[in-house]
Amino acid sequence: MATLENSPKHDLGSLRINEGQRKGRKTGRIFGIGAALIGVVVIVTGAVFAFRNQKPVVEVAVAQKAAAGRPALLNASGYVTPRRRATIAAKITGRVTRVNFDEGLHVPEGFVLATLDDSDARRALDSAKADRDSAQAAIADFQVQLKNAEIELQRAQQLLAAGVQSQQTLDNATMAADSLRAKIALAKQQVAGAQARVSEAQQAVDNTVIRAPFDGIVVSKDAQVGEMVSPNSAGGGFTRTGIATIVDMNSNEIEVDVNEAYIARVVPGQNVTAVLDAYPDWQIPSRVRTVIPTADRQKATVKVRISFLKLDPRILPDMGIKVTFFGAEPEQKSGAAEPAVLIPQDAVRDDQGKKIVFLVKNDHLERRAVGLGATRGSDAEILAGLDAGDIVVVKGPATLHDGEAVEIKK
Image (cartoon, rainbow, N blue to C red; front, side, top):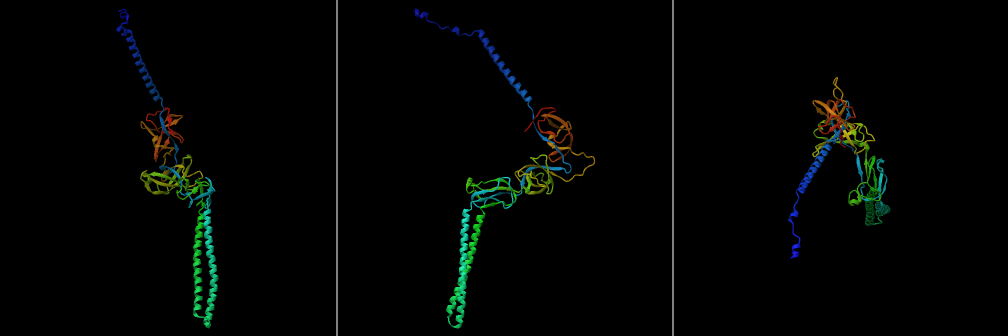
């Protein structure tokens, strides 16, 4: 009984939470919520501050000096393309044994670019020559026999006239002579056939020599010694189909695609100014050679070919180029101001009835009022307010203002 009385009893009151502890937990929870709210406010404030300090991105263009004289009707871009460009290939399949050129080499017409293995072709040529020589030798033998047969025929005729020999002997002599003449004619035909086979075999030998078809410059070296070449890709990826690519630099011209909506402004013989992307300060006088009489239905463009009035070694095939098509010489009005520069029309903005542009100087904007003239294609004439070489904003936010720092789009 003593043991049962001394055993520990369960005290449910010990599990109670004091009122002070409850208040402490509520205070901590409130403090945690407040700290979270403060963090959110700090993050949002930082994001707003960063957004406000972000520089607007703008696209720019350089003001170009306006060309005096004829007005520009249209601008287009394209590439320099040679009218004479050829990828030289072999007429037969063979192994390259020699290459006599490198990129950039000027080669005259007929220059030996490369040679192929001609051992088999030369053996066939030697065999054809032997057959021809054998046929010619047979002709010589038949001619000797015919000479003797004609003597025998003459003698038989004389003996028959003297009554010594019979008519049969004369007939046999005549037949022998005619037979030899027929054999000689056949042998001559055989010689002609053998000569044709010799020419064919010689052509096969000549086909192992690859020559330049015209004067030009080698722009691509497509085969090396030891490689197999073929006029077709019968050997798969292991067989070359070309030896070299040659371009006639004197045939360089410009090829541009003109939107079909403006093709009526382009006519053959029209004056054009071309500017290579590689030499933006070099204006090349040119003239429209032809308008290709067909349109590309997918791009809605018409191809125009333009000839350079004077070629230059700096003009290379496949260079990017921009061209401006000019109209007829306008009548100069007295007192009319000459345009100073040309800029894209998108660069001109309207500010309360005034025409302005934004210049970019040291990555900051400068508002500039301009005097606007006529339009030239997609460009606008600026009569006053800008100089050639000024950098103007073409595309950017509508909220741009004077003195604002900007970032130029690359």
